Length: 67
Image (cartoon, rainbow, N blue to C red):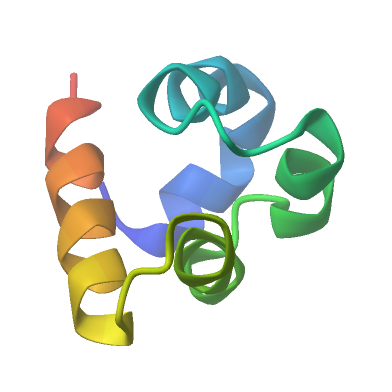
């Protein structure tokens, strides 16, 4: 699933993101709006990840939500 598909399905995927990253608030998820770079940035901010670690976590999550 590429970034454009995630953005298009963000309303459905917000719950999955919330389950994966409980420290993200509903406001965070609204701001992210399905954009990979914003999600990676919030993971860095909330969890203290490096950019590389946050991107790796994003890729892992992206693979887990493929149907």
